Amino acid sequence: MRAALGCALAACFVACAREPASSPARPVAFPPPPVLTSAPLAAPSALPSPPVAEPQATEGYAGAEDEPVDDGEPLDDVPPPLSAPPKPHPLEGWSEADIEKQLREDASVLGSMSVGRPGAGALINGVQLPESDAWQRVDAAHEWGTQETVDYLTEAIGVVRKQFPDSHPLFVGHISARHGGHLSPHISHQSGRDVDISFYYDDPDSTHWYARATTKNLDRARTWAFVRALITHTDVQLILADYSVQNMLKEYALGIGEDPAWVEGLFKGVPGKFRPLIVYAKGHATHLHIRFFNPIAQETARRAHRALLALDRIKPPVYYITHKVKKGETLGMLARKYGVSVREIQQANHLKNTVIVAKHEYKIPRKGGVSAPPRVVVPPRRLPPHPPRPKSESAKN
Image (cartoon, rainbow, N blue to C red; front, side):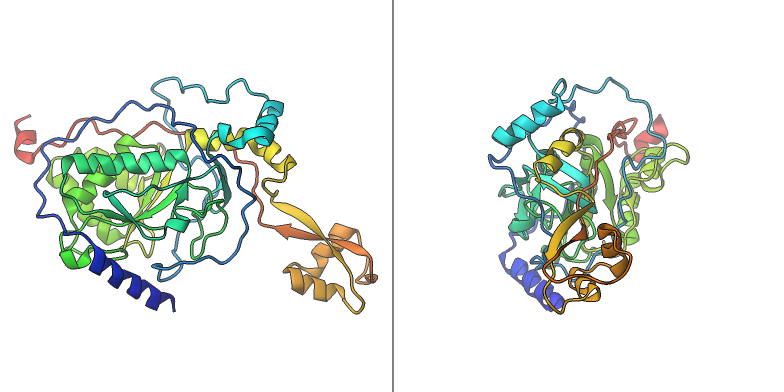
């Protein structure tokens, strides 16, 4: 069924796609990265309700992605020293009482919050990816992210459009559901920081969502320009791509004179310093999976976590509901109904045996809430030592 939906959606995009760009000209120079400024705190006016783990529409996704499980922050083994003092957070000086009061009165003032981890999180005050002629939304209902994620994505695509104005629109797949939480078929995409996005293609027949990248259809110049912009213009945490795509991009980057040591570090990391930014994951020959650090949204979520729990806007990792026992129900029936073990119900209610009494209420443990996020250390951007230089020019120097 999913495969059929994916094929149908792909056929739709082939029919509606714009005229593909002509063969790319080799870029002369890449623009310098901008100075990072604080992301705006604009956000929807209403505070969303807690995320609910329900099955959701997944048109265009042929199957579950084999994504790495996010075990915490930061991903870098040894974060390098910051080149400049970090800018103060917008909530600097706010007490927990101030934050809770603002959540009660007008949560939108606090801006986007990426709560928890990409694989077990929530999104507060999310921002929907807007419409644009630079991209095409595959599933707009599930393209909600933090303000920073949306800003970073549009910035990187904008860099490519400045270099190649005739580029076809990229196809943007899932980011997160409006309030975060589980989004089928993904492991991640729960906290507004993950984005699935297509490649740029040379072949008109491949200009649609979920087209597999090959040596015959991948537009290396534009796709590398996009990846490079993510690395130099945003706080990207990782980029998932198939080895076949990695090899094509690496060959192209070295061919236009990118610094070999810098390129090698992006794909293989530097032992004892940092992990690679461009990482292999099965199933990513049809699209890139991008994850961003969100220095503002993650820190806002950390500071607001207790208040969010107190106001029942999110659930803790383990929480409890009550069940009033009906005549004839057994502890085993309750365990099967709620998807927990008999032992867990016994522990929650201090039961020494399996006897339960009709019309009595018992606590049922539930999992799937959001744990307190750690303080996030965002490493400096990995900027190249110089703009790309053709090999002939490099040889002269």
